Image 1 (cartoon, each protein chain N blue to C red):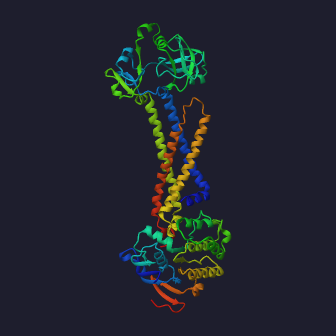
Image 2 (image 1 turned 135 degrees about the horizontal axis):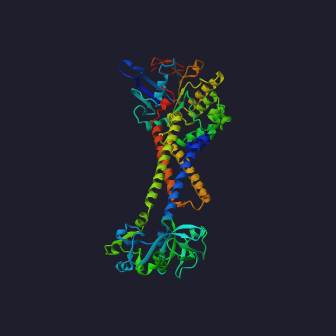
Image 3 (image 1 turned 90 degrees about the horizontal axis):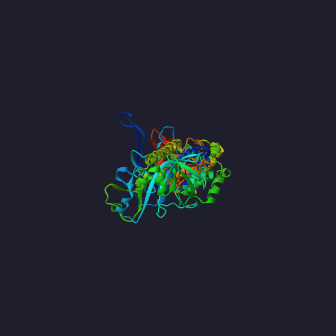
Length: 232
Length: 358
């Protein structure tokens, strides 16, 4: 069974003449262990898609089903819980809390959620991301790239079912960008999670199992890396 | 929930120290005013509290004023109570040739329950011997000193001191009724020695059963105190100031935290996007307010007691610790109420807007 299913999902803003269709009728499925890219020009509806999947935005019509729960139909309080449990966000805007040190960013998550990474797993994750030496620093002390890697570590820390990343490699140099995407790929495969990445970064396309294109609110499957994946 | 609150304060020390400083100053003012209120109450009522009486019998026409109440000793027969103590009262100026001092003379019978304890010297026996409140001792009067009361040429001798005896802001001098008549009426004392001001009573019965005499009024002690000149007015003024300060502190907390919350909109939004619940964030803000107001109150409390040590005796400040602790607790509760205003703001933050999505 697909871990994520979007059925007849649309999002429109305004009404009448001023009606804007940010997302046209979309059907989408993602399985565990899939690394998926969504590419397309800015303003095409990529972010709308990502925020709907993440339960931050309620679609105008349709269903968003994550692990059997219909995201579009439940109250914010339960959605908040579901986000905490199932979703790891890597946002364009840094998703770190400015007054917490790197170490405490993870401690905060321990306070609000059980079954996060243990100490050994976190140690190796931070080493992989090369931010292990920054544990006592605050986000303002970090460079853009370091903050981005911290955001990735934070998203992975809670063992999410689905990782949603908005331009995760935008502020990284080539070498680091490859490392990050390799890390996401490794996490996706080893933990059997689903990772959806919105990106402009054409250097990385080869890493993805599926690449979708978003143009004017229409999502189309562009390429599939391996067989056998059925057309939808 | 202390986690976020604590780490944020640690990271932004200056900001939170300033807020705490303001809370501390307001708490300081609250404590000081409550000390002043208690102090002013004390100098008005402590001689009456010393009686541990249930009521005082005054004439109906006196309107609960001891000084205005004049009756004959005969009335004692009309009273039914466990203990009855006659009292005469006269306000005058004491003058020992150097110092002048407002005093209140209480005429008491040595074998009644309103006879004061003697902390130094001995009780009065002969005419014109008196026991004085020890506040006079601090002002330079000593055992064996003599002084006159205004309106009389008789010399009074201090043979003993008692404590905690002030009535309507004046120290009390206790003496016999004979002395009282000689002082108050001079040569006319002979004809006036059947008069006194009232009877202080202790009783387990209902006060309505004390007397059937219509010209007498049985005034419960607390009512009597509230009717002392200026007593209620003073209390109401100071209490009004304290209540205002408590409201002001709630408003201050509400404003400060609201500004901080608005500044942190995007941080709250990010945390909410990640699924940290409104409840957790709200509890953090309340916890933060608790820490701020608790520390502010604690420092204000200490500072008030410290100030009290350096105040001259003339300032009527008495720190009643239970009263202060009550005000401290109310202060903290009120501050937390102020913080709830920001909780509403947090709940309303849309995580989507906060993270800059569309």
